[in-house]
Image 1 (cartoon, rainbow, N blue to C red):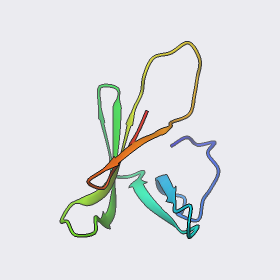
Image 2 (image 1 turned 90 degrees about the horizontal axis):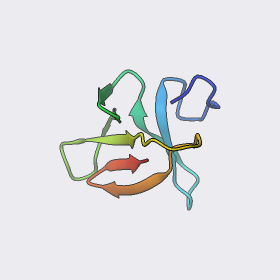
Image 3 (image 1 turned 90 degrees about the vertical axis):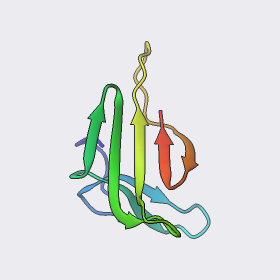
Image 4 (image 1 turned 180 degrees about the vertical axis):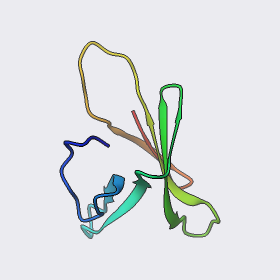
Length: 85
């Protein structure tokens, strides 16, 4: 998401990289080139298909105002969309 973010095994063109806590496997859930900004919500699509669906895996980051800076926190997963605030 940020230029200063550390590289992951998902690759350099990946905005959001998910790690399976059981297997340790990582996969892209948002590519930098496939983004859409709507108000204070940033949506990333990936090129990976959601299992059992024709939709692609996605990430949605909702930016909220606050007195301190923070990092995106995972909120929920629904229909292959990973939600962060």
